[in-house]
Amino acid sequence: MSDPAKTPVKIGNVLHPVADVDAAVRFYADTFGLATKFVDGDRYAALDAGGTTLALAGPAEDVTGGVPAASFKVPDVAAALAALVQGGGSVVREPEQGPHEVRAVARDPWGNTVVVYGPQ
Image (cartoon, rainbow, N blue to C red; front, side):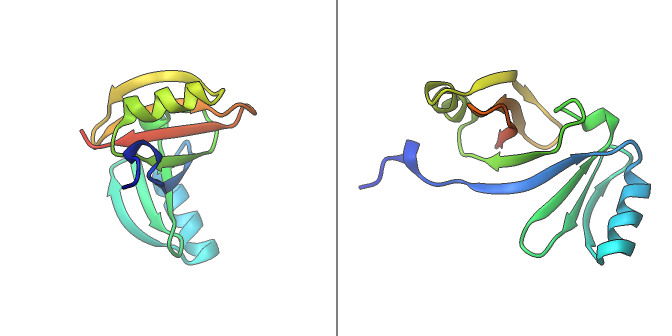
C-alpha cells in the first residue's frame, strides 16, 4: 500500500503574473496560438498550453510578488507545506482561501518560488 504523503502530485499550472490579463490573453493567443480555457475578469485567465495550463494572474491574484512559479495541486495543502519545510524549503505565504482554492506560496531549498494549492 502506498503512503498518501508520498503520492505524486501534478503541476496544475505555471503561474505568470501580468499587469493586464486581457492584453496577456491576446498576446499568448496571437503569439503561440494558446486557447483560452477560463477567464475570471481582470483577475485571472487559464490558457491551454498543450497539456499544461498557463495561468495569467492579474494584480489582484498575484500571490508571488511578480515571480513566475510552478503551481502544485495537492490533496492537503498543510501536509504538503510540512513536507516542503521538512525537506529544506520555506513558507513565504501561509495557506489562504482564494476564490477557487486554498493556496500558499513557498520556496524550495534553492530559492525557487512555488505555489501549493488544493481543494477548499
